Amino acid sequence: MTGHDDLPAAVRARRLEERLIAAGLTSDDEIDEYLTRLYAKASPVNGAQMVARAWIDPQYRDLLLSDGDVAAAELGFDGLGYALRVVANTATTHNVIVCTLCSCYPVSLLGPSPGWYKSFAYRSRTVREPREVLAEFGLTLPDDVGISVWDSTSEARYMVLPTRPAGTGELAADELAALVTRNGLIGTALV
Amino acid sequence: MSYPAGSTVRVRTGDPDHHTRVPRYVRGHTGVIVAALGQWPVPDDSARGIDPPRVETCYAIRFSAADLWGSGDHTVTVDLWESYLDRP
Image 1 (cartoon, rainbow over the protein chains, first blue to last red):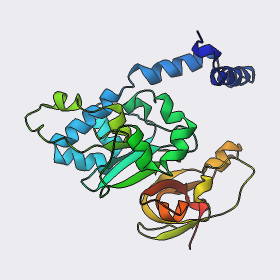
Image 2: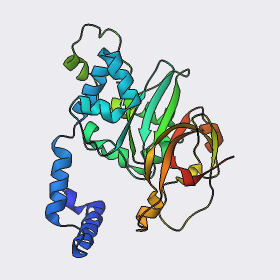
Image 3: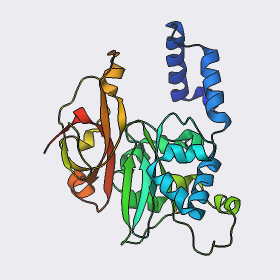
Image 4: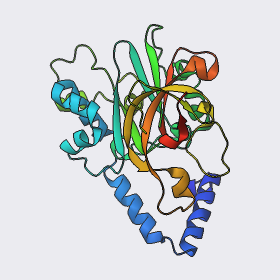
């Protein structure tokens, strides 16, 4: 069995850490503390709660689409450390997020990014042939639904606001949030 | 200088030998400003340890797939700092 520590990328990352530590720029403790803090509360449940609230509350939806950081803070997710930009799916436009240069991603609201998000295949093909990529995720969009791809090349981090599924009018906020998946927040699933 | 939403810009060509956040696939292409995102340090400067780095407006800019790739009906929106841009 191959463990995480044996992966070439992990070996390379560790070498880089060792160089930074040797140069006096950081320490193992500092790196550990940062990662613990980053992942302690990071989960797609956070993004899902924001989506559910936006489905129920039109004012919150407007806030979410105009100032993502303020909207996140309103649900207790403050100090994101990035400019959150939320893009809404509509009947005629589907949004999907990618980072072609590296793997930028709103970790605190979506949890640790999936391996495929960081893969060369996803990063290079999503900007080139998103309809085919989405179909491989099991999401076949009608031809009359346009696709808007967002390449996260700056300090902004993107999240998709999926369309509320039909027949969910009776559901409470926590039940609605349970419908929202990580892939829905990236755009590789409908919800 | 700043670009209002809806205005057309061209991404500068060139291939700097230092770090940059301009994806190769938009260099030389024309796009439309969707929104100004904020004023942030230019990564080309930060990565080279230039202190202080230039701080510039960063824009979300939409490109058509047909223009970028010669095919496709989707759009690709890329965030680019002001000094990456020229008027067309």
